[in-house]
Length: 265
Ligand SMILES: [Mg+2]
Image (cartoon, protein in one colour):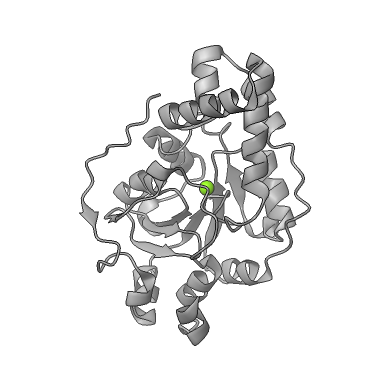
């Protein structure tokens, strides 16, 4: 599958009325999510912060997989990885389409990482637990990776299930059929659901299907693992809200007041 990154979507300035959560009152925010009964979360760089060392470890394993498969040096395998990622949405997709690589072998290899640096995120756990309704993870990674990672974050007991890249028939977000497959499998009515995600383009179909969309971005000064073409200069109109503090944002949805600490964050 070729990903088209040049979608003709209307753009609003980053400081426009649609995006920055600070510009919205608590009451408006609670009202905007009042109809939501299903909460859908991406995993990587969404449920754990982008300054965690987890994603760089996975990223390095992907590079190593390519290096071993093709006998390449690190620089060449890195370049190939970036090429597959941009052209096919995930490196795995490129490897499967161009080289018939086994998905299970790849997923097992790249997610074989040390997660000891992760610790329970009590603030996020409390905020997710307080959301009324179902909670699901929708990830381009593997189910095993999501479960292990969520467990280290102290979040695993909060989610009804994980929809992973295997459940998606190995078709990564942002493919429309992946969301539709997810909605069908878990009987999610998108017009009553919300999606939280760190990659802008992955919110396009959720918005088109009627979900409330929130882009989770790195805090100021925090490392940003998104590719340059994934970092929008302006926030597209398919993003309803942006936040650099997922737990704080969810607390506001749960009716907690917008505190001075949130304002300073
Ligand atoms: Mg992510």
